Length: 122
Picture (cartoon, rainbow, N blue to C red):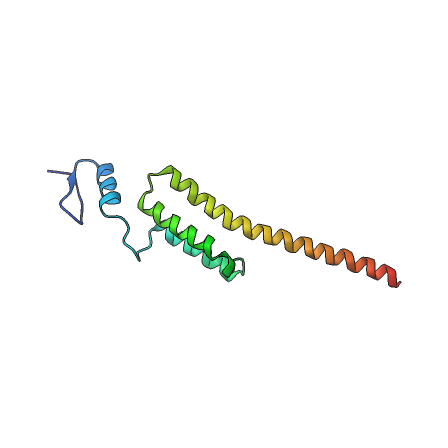
């Protein structure tokens, strides 16, 4: 008798890894059900949106991240997908950092300009 049985079909095996592989390939994550990476990506995006760090212009980046998260949830054994997924996360977070840097530079320029103007009127 097999030690591991698929709860969705007749597949049975003596190895847990074989059952895990079977489930990934024969019963991928169903559409509409979030796997752990999709749930984490949605949570990250939700927090970035709450903080005003992502906007409508970031829609394609947001969708790329979710699509990659779905694929990683379905194929967690693929290192290339993980690299792409991490790069998409980094890209989205770097965009946020770039916006912070641009804001800081603008504020510094404003502060520098107001000092020059203040000195001229003294």
